[in-house]
Image (cartoon, rainbow, N blue to C red; front, side, top):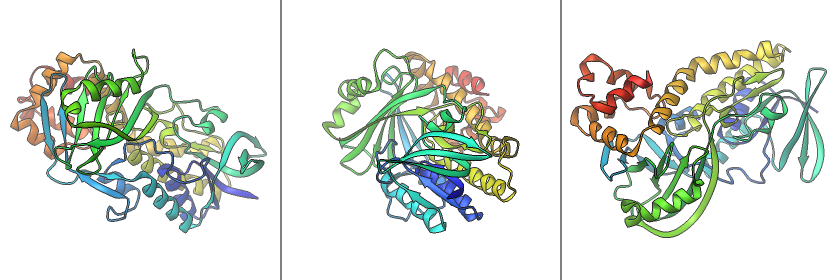
Length: 399
């Protein structure tokens, strides 16, 4: 049996790509290596309002556990910068329920689903992709005109088809634990040497439970788990609210910086597998959904034209880069600049932001998914007079 499109990976990116390919008339199969959708969880479960909307679902659905409107940013010296978005900016979700909801939408559109299917090799013969799959313990061959690899940070599809792997992967860890949140409308962020190269976070599920985690650049002195243990025990704010009872623990990688090429003959790569992740926050659901829709549409159109060549499929890369390329580049500049600051410089930076004029700008123009909007506003001559010290250097460096 030959499929028009086989999507490898049933996360939000894969299920969205499958749905859009099926909506355009393609015969679609989703292959998921795990026995159930949405597990294991490797995500904070904090989705921007735009990410939820981009996935074509409503926040009223049963996957939403809490809503968030802002953040308390804690500098290394303990200074707290309150950033209040004044309205809901993100949702804390159950990724298990969220992912299952998206897969059900794809299946309702006509896509087929194969669970416990692990792709172990890919070959091309006469223009058709042959996927070797271990399904329920047996080796089978699945034939497809086009493959969409949405199989995560360690993408086998990208590796088997010669597109390589993302060069830069942050090491992340998160626990769900008993934690006395000061305000469940706000997440908390902790920067500096306590989470070198990135940041630590608390995401409130409710008044008593939060998701506590961090990510660090590779090559640091300790691994992510050790940094997490250290911060929950030694950071005065965290230690005062954390009760040392872990209810869950997940580890994973956060890919930042896209693949050099995300297409080849009969193959498209999307989402974490392609490094299409926001370098500022590590979030990949919004960017993955944007790219997934393009991938599904381009794949279905190529099938209808009976043209699966790389020259035809390069339209996918052109379109997703037009939609997200600038934001990902800006985000990487922000990531690298912030990651290169000392604790003292971060103290100065956060201290310089703590004035009413800047906080009003951040409230008005701050955007989790499009950081360049705020940067442009900050460098406007009318606003730049409020920038001082390290913050002025930060804004200039990003652009």
